[in-house]
Image (cartoon, rainbow, N blue to C red; front, side, top):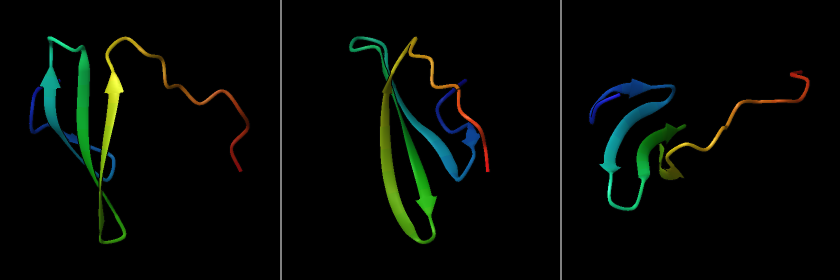
Length: 50
């Protein structure tokens, strides 16, 4: 992925290779949320979906 790529509810805002993090900006019903995650973490949903 590259900076600016679209994701569900937002886009990829920043890739920090030094700290191995990525930051997404998400629009949750008009509220802008910044979500930062470490590179390499697995965020797959492992439960049952309703």
